[in-house]
Image (tube, rainbow, N blue to C red; front, side):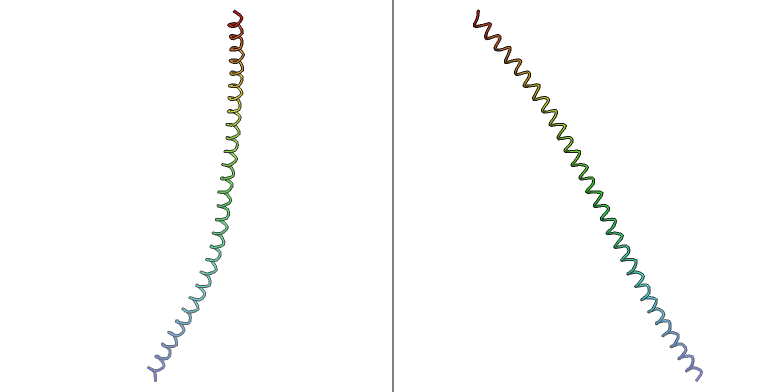
Length: 104
């Protein structure tokens, strides 16, 4: 009978250990799921913020490009106006030369 009690106590302790391990595994699984969900949400937030930063940089680049385009346009307009003035001067001088040539 003594051996039988020892066997029952051993089996009961194994069953208790298995139950404790099962409960611990369930608790650990719940904790893992909870922290995974928190990490997933945090990842979405960080991704959203990173996307916002990327969009702001693209917007900044667009603004810089537009500003540069405007500056280039004004430089080209200035060069065009200078060429027009030079052409007008040359045309005036040509007409004066033609007038002098035909008068003589």
